[in-house]
Length: 272
Image: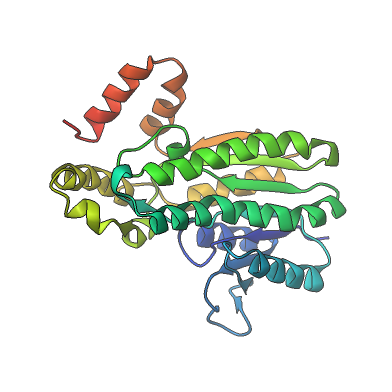
């Protein structure tokens, strides 16, 4: 039987690239989006698009139940849905914090909880959680984005232990900067932007962040990695992907003294 893959946040960016590539490789691909899909009954280029708001457990269950009704099985879940908010931690509004954590972290939790019973029925399956190199090192003015990705790391480490008896594989993918719509879709804290305390530094640091993102890699690289992970009988737990400097700087964290590592981050992000 064809492998059935569910990809959250598949209407753009990394999710869209993964959905298109895996569909072309012959997988049965279901993608999700918060909005109704354009196209005939949610079918776009051999990808079945479902409406799902990952922050709403009922919406998640409804979409997965529809997938099961149509396919009878679920083999792979790629938790890709996410968003970013740029701003100073001190000035973050409660609603901004909730939006960031509910989308990136609790959204993934909702999908995993709804999908796990069906993955067990299919013999185990795979859960691939999109973290980030920001889940390895805290990035200035991306604090709650980093926090959401650090949370994904800890959750995935624990989940991997708990579902091992059911032969379910949990995998973390940690991308660096890739050229997607993430930059233009980022929510900017107006309070930080207009702040006399943080505003000037925020502007300088965000210029660095946005340049790295727009100069980033092609998301097709991540799609190809997903294909290799799905096909692998014994995938690694953690995959870093991106340019050579970013991925190796993240790997070096365990060897470099913490204050030295922070100095290097301040230098890179033009914090003085």
